[in-house]
Amino acid sequence: MPSLSLDKTDLRILAELQLNGRLTNVELAERVALSPSPCLRRLKQLEESGVIQRYVALLDPSQIGLGLQAFVRVSLEKRGNALTQQFLEAVQGWPEVINCFAMTGDMDFLLQVYFEDMAHFSRFVMDELMQQPGIEDVRSSFVLKEYKHTTALPLEQLQAQE
Image 1: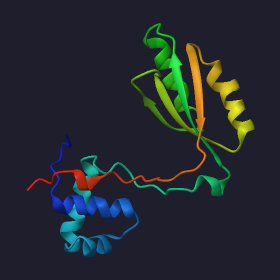
Image 2 (image 1 turned 180 degrees about the vertical axis):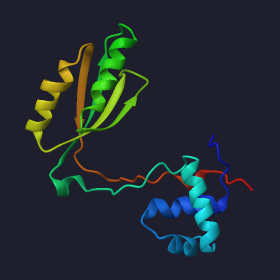
Image 3 (image 1 turned 60 degrees about the vertical axis):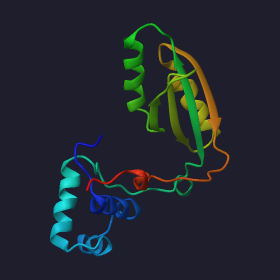
């Protein structure tokens, strides 16, 4: 549950910002049917409460030479928390890893990674990933084609506070 109760106007502000985070306050206010001052107050409250974490530019990986995307499933030996902590610290230093998730099921972690090509992937797996202590199993799946990609959370399914 969010620490801030969100009403319909807050959800509209968030929806608009998920579509375009570079809207000016005046543009945002117009789109959510508020005057600029109340819109700015609500926006600041959403930022200060942590609902809005940050603003970013979303890049097209293939346009900057990162044409190979993969999901790497990692299983660790079950020898205590130290290996897990060591692995998580290593993940923070790998720029190829854009997401790391702890998972249920037959793997411990799922990594979303980007590479220039298969040689870059191979170097990463052999020289970085497999060199980590406690790695029990690594399995990779490569993205053939992306059919849906969004960073927008499904706000329409949330119940607005009245």
